[in-house]
Length: 506
Length: 50
Figure 1 (cartoon, rainbow over the protein chains, first blue to last red):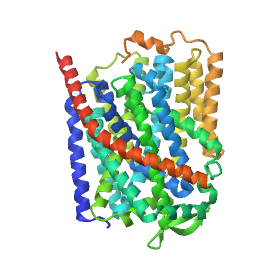
Figure 2: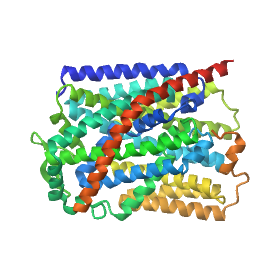
Figure 3: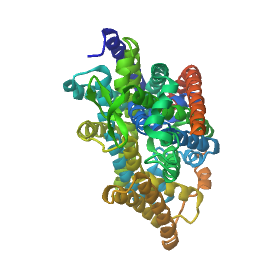
Figure 4: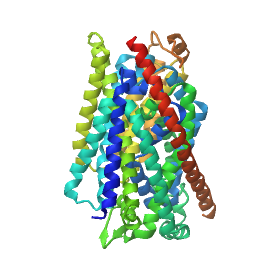
């Protein structure tokens, strides 16, 4: 066991405080809009805190450090693209401003506004399926981090992860987005402190010049040049650009933050400033991975990369970073860092729980009821449905997350599973917002061809992630174009200018 | 290779400094936003009750 008493005290105090302030949110929940989008009351700074906390988890640190370990400084290109794309979306208001003007609560809701209820249900199903499966690997990776850094006995790991998930579930189910925003604020501050501490330790102990020398000796120029790096290259960079543009505009948990802001202008500011945080969100943990390669990378070569070795035991590259931290951090500091990582974990998981369960309740259950001719439910009943969906997603995650192990680099796996629905959703949203001819037939073609473009080449033809990513976005665009030109014009397409007629400009 | 190394070093410094500075600003001003959000939500609930 690597944990001292002081470390346990710090972690327990953090968990108790987090739980208590999370429960505070309950007294402000009056209706579904309060529960799902915090009554659209988010200001700029709290918006930045909640968006950053939502998209920075232990899983983020783990997969980014793994990328740094495997691909060296060339991995920074993925982080740079994610940050620059976010700043671009924030500065221009690309997609997010128009979606915010429509006063939506979920991304698939737009599909009924612009296309049809049927397409909303199909999109809701694909978004929920892809999103929950995507999140399904989080628990396993986070569990590995906790086990390695704390030296926790494997037999207590499952119980610990279930306990953490239950804590998140309680305050998410009770207070919805309001509880999440309150806890995100605390969690953002804590995870940022942990990030800065780890970076200082990593650079201090590994040394900048030693890290550069190690990457040079192991990878040569490919460790710096993303065009020549294995698994990277020009096509990878273009796919990353498309993927990150779609994540920043159509990823449910990110979009919910945009929908929760006070105005479209606030959403643009939140997105812009969070873009700068995204640079660090990627590059700093990648640097930890390079430090871990420098300090622990002495094992046998696998695909040209030396495996990390600790006390004679060979680990997987993804476990190198927590193993390095368990060696470098002293008592007290280790507790603060683990509390910070737990904060990161809880902020991501709670937001994702709410995000995906909101899609099930709002975009599958509610429209299916409408389609069957059932009357709309009362707001209190809708709230109850949201909470039940929350619980159901949580229970599924416990089983799926602990049973399933993703193959290969986790970052690339998460990217490709996200692409399954993001390619179609992104193309449909852009087409719907910026092309008058886009119609429901084109929407169906784009969603289905986008999903097929990601699934068939990657899972069945065993093509690279870049190839599958390109295929997904390309086929989706072709699907929207051809489907819209061949299909009948929609009877009542809602173009963005009609948002003003809804009286919903803020 | 040196060109790429300096390029990544520069971006690393930019991202690290931006991360630290934005954290500091958000920690201070975010708390103010949080209080404003509570006031706004309470007012909305009051209107709904009335």
